Amino acid sequence: MTPLIVILLYLGITFSIGTYAWWRGRVTADDYYISARSQGYLVTALAIMATFFSSFAMLGAPGMLYKGGIGFVFFMLNVPICGALIWIIGRPLWSLGKRHGYITPSDLVADYFSSDTLRVLVALLGFIYIIPYAVIQFKGGGYLFEVITRSSDVHLGFFTLVQGKISLGPFNISTHDFGAVLLASITMVYTIMGGMRAVCWTDVFQGGLLVIGMIVGGIITIFILGGVAGLFGQAAAVSTPGHPAGEFITLPGPAGMFPVTMIFTFVLVASFGTMASPGQWMRYYSAKNPDALRKSMIIFAVVLTACYFFGTTFIGLGGRVLFPELAQADTVYLVILEKYLPLVLASFFVTTIMAAAMSTANGNLHALSALITNDIYRRFLRPGGKAGQRELVWVGRTVITAASIVSLWIALQPDIGMIFKLGMVSIAVSMQMFPSLIGPLFWKGATRAGTVAGIILGMAVLLVTFMPEKFGITAFGISPLGIHYGFWGFTFNLAALYVVSRFTRPPSRETVERFHTGY
Amino acid sequence: MNDENRAKNKKLFRILLLLFAASYLMSNGPGVLLVNRPVLLAGIPLLYLWGLGWAVVQIGLILYAYFRIWRHEIEPGTTGPGVSGKAEEAGS
Image 1 (cartoon, rainbow over the protein chains, first blue to last red):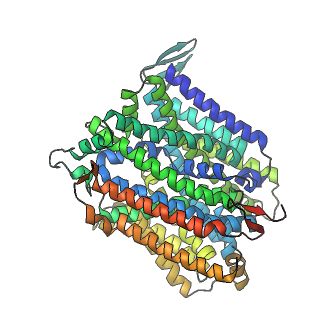
Image 2: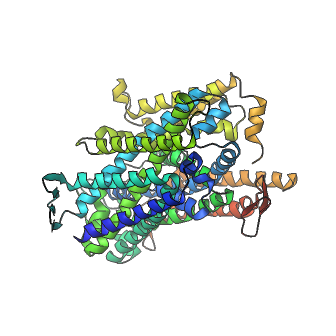
Image 3: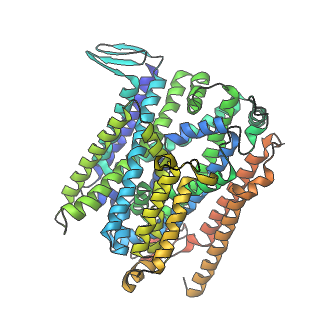
């Protein structure tokens, strides 16, 4: 019963915050999609952090350390880069967004290049990025609910929860599916109601929880293993047949997962891809002033780096020492909680992982609704400003409902291997969007044709290097030369942008002036 | 901010960007091979200390840029940063 109460308490608080945000909001597109550009620095910082931290950070990252050893520490160095990007790209995006009234990433790119092709392409990249990401978060939520309630035995009238099954009268459902439905429904309802304001305010609560979850998880592991030196000393002695002691604390690690080429290229993909994703982009727009972004940059870089180095690392490496034979590496944090904490505390920390899943799902679903409503519905189905403010909000709400139901339906399928694959590639897809920023923000010579060519070629190269066997290529495995497939795509994307731009006409002088001056 | 200061800040930003890139090459590029040995220093793996050290350098560069350049930037339509670095809305 205890886990159920703790989870319901967490969901209840989250839902109440979302409802309060709805009560405080107004029914205008500007308010619903970007909080009328009113978020202060603490809300902006925690919203960016909570969206950045998915359930991967709490489950997958310790699992990578568990399997591959200390090399994953270097993947964490994407955090300072992401922090710097909050200001380097976030500030000009905020300025241009406020000056020209942009709501989505496509608004800005399409306006600069006067191109509906780019509007649709950028929206499409956003769509490809968001759906698999939301599916994985819902799936993660279901999995967490299943784990935390597996020893529960609850009988309350028509309601029973026994051995991974929930019965309500004649209806039966597995705890996994129930958890996914519960998490998705609550996320969907408060996002529909309160829009960006609800997303950001719940992110503050969830962001705080997940920081606590990571840091305290690390402290618990250190405590169990007799201090930092005790933890590292035992991790250094980890050995398996064919992999002598010491491999666990060197590159590329016992599983060969972390060659230098991979840590060099993946970190660039992860940082640029994440910070150019539609959800983060809209958080820059929703900041109250540049100062909110300035301070967010500092909070993000300092707090998240600490979480990874003093939380995730200790959980992953310490978990390998404590439980060397886990069948599923990404359960390591859950196993530590289950084994060493009283049930009520373990349940609380599981809710911090749920918070990571929900805060990523809500931001992305909300961004998707903006992309479809603003870039497709308003532009092509109701052009010329025919759609009123209320209509745009209600279309957005419908999109969130549809996207949540579709994502949940996919998450409930028994085999979602392909979606997991797409989830893995989603950050690399988002990175292909980054060069579309080069024209409006950095290089006056970038042209519409160059940007379109870059995105198309980048996506093509990304797909070929990610799934070479699907294209009949057997000369190399995934990620040739140990270079991440996202980086291959990005390199070709930039090359095409440069070459094609040299031979085509840039935007008019007035447009360039409008974008490149005044910030 | 006058043109002279703007030019100075631009130059400083470029230097800091180069330093950040160099620190990245040391942390996640060929530089990491310099310390790729199973050695513990004060009970802590050399590679962990290396990664943590470069993270501190990178955050230090961000903080330096914040205090020396970004904190004092004046946004168009504002009166400029106050003591806390907050750019007040013009006329408020």
